[in-house]
Length: 126
Image (spheres, rainbow, N blue to C red):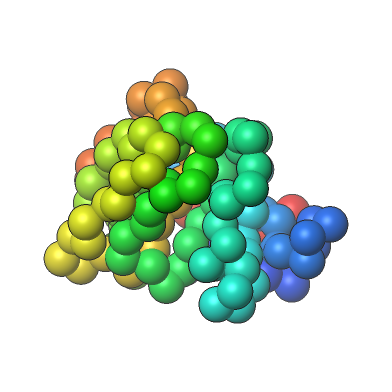
């Protein structure tokens, strides 16, 4: 999945940190939760997100208990975007056939980044 290993660097939470890239352009810093508990916690308890969060493996996500809306990009194993959905709080995103990862960002981020279905995302270490 891209050129990142989660050992590239680590943020305060113990998660890996990298860059989300599309067509050679850095879109945002990217958090990489390590382990099942990190993926399960995701963005819960936060009041927002700077950058993006990659959940892998994951086919769907939810915003139950979250305080803000997110964009969720469901991607295949090569990080090709299959679908992008804006989820308000307390919603569940249904799985998409072929999805293996989900990239979460603040609502409207993918539109601002000009990234839609079919785009291939990359992960680059710091």
